[in-house]
Every structure is written in structure tokens, then in C-alpha cells.
Length: 323
Image 1 (tube, rainbow, N blue to C red):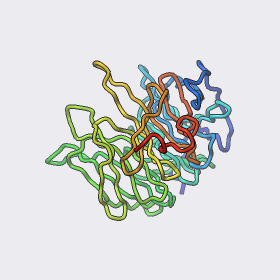
Image 2 (cartoon, one colour; image 1 turned 90 degrees about the vertical axis):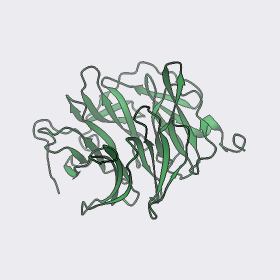
Image 3 (cartoon, one colour; image 1 turned 90 degrees about the horizontal axis):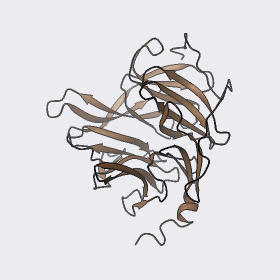
């Protein structure tokens, strides 16, 4: 059902209209073998990326401007280096959270209600006809489960006595819009990253339970039982994403250098063992896997990059690197 059509500014969808805008490329050199420069971060600057689960050439990019504080959500073709704008706003309240498993819908997190989005919350954009639908009034992170009918929603719920904020995870049926609470943590105050395993049995995310620091660790929720297991314990882990092959997890680890923090990409096994830093990625954010699990795209300081996991680590990644 079509809930809303854009009236004031038409929605431009690359899949049907085909309007593209060339990205400006400032640097075409790869930092190391196996890592390829794709495009600049642009203006507004790319802030997060999500690879299409169906198309190995398409990446969903969310960008936020500074100091103008505008935002843009677009699809980047990593082969042609072109982009197709889905949403452009003069405020930073719209973020592209991800794709449906069939690639036919994109989820937007909208924090500010206005004419285009009369209700804040989670909206879907149909990539075939541009129609939009409000899924949930809860805003924050989403993880679309592989069945295509279930959406994991991770939120900060407000107004609790023990803690002014509570992190909660809900599973929502896409058709009925009915949500079920499957996890809550009254000690956590923030989170980052939210991803489903390829079989839909587990959800991985990071939590921060300290008001006075940015320390966070990775946790895995077993969906059928509701049990949660912590897999990192260094207080420096965030933004995890599960490999489509179900064998690896990539995430961002922060490192203290003097008074500043730097961020590097890591991979580890789902049981938390064999944590390896991905070399030569520099300051890196928002890792996302290609549909076949062979590559990881990420945002570097000056642009969007793609690394070939096998070329960087070798065919058998853990054979000689982990005990």
C-alpha cells in the first residue's frame, strides 16, 4: 500500500528513472594491494554505507554535511563511480539503514517530521516505483532478517527509573506491523551497528554502558532463545556486520593515540576468537560486506574503498594467523 508520494520534490530512483550524477574523484590510488579506491566522500560527506544484498555494484550511502548540517541518501555504483540520489534534505535527520533481502526496498530512519515525512520513524522506499510507507514510529537501527518478512529494530527507549535510557530490540512482522520485544538492557545507554546472521538465528550489535566514556563491546543475541553473549571485552568495539558466508564478522575498533582516538577495521570469528586487524585501511568506518562475502567496503578519511578479503589475508585467512 502506498502511504506517501513525494509531492514537493520527486524521488529519484536509479532503478527506474536512471538519472545519475558523477562523483568527483580526488584520489584514484589504492593504499595497498587488495584495496581499491572507489569515490570521494563527497559533500555532504559519506557517513555510513550498506552494500546491496542482491547487486554487487550498488552501495547505499548516507551523507551528512558540515557546517550546513544537510543530509543526502544515495545509491553509489562502485563500477561506474556514479550515484543516484534518493533523498536530499536541509537537515541531518534522514539515514539509509539498509536494504530488504530481495533488494526491492530501502529502509530510511527519519528523525524529524516535516512535509516530506509527516511522521518520524522508519520508512521504506520501493526501489521499483518510488512509493513510500511508514513501518514504525521507532527510530534508530534496523537489521532485515533473511526471511524478508521480519525486521529487527534496535531503539533507545526513554523514561526508565534505573536509567533514563534503555536499549531494546524488537522483531517486527512487515505485513502486520506487529512488534515483539526480544531483548532489553537497562544499563546500556547507546549502541552502534546492528546486523543479522545469514540464517536469521543471531543478531550482532555493540553496547555502551558507561555515561562517562565511549567504551563499547560486541554482543550476539540468539533469536530463538533470547540469550545474549558478549564476544569482545576491550571496550573499543563498534559497528559490527555479519559476513554473508556466516563465517566472519567485521567491525570497527578504536585505539587511543595521545588525546585522540583512531579507528581501524577488524575481523573475528562469531565465537569471538581470532580477532585480526585488517592492515592498511587507515582511519576507517562503516564496514559492509559484498553479497558474496568476498569483499568489504568501508569509508576512509578521504573516500569510499573496497578491499578483497582473500587478497589482503590470503586464501586461508586463519590458517597461519591464529593459534
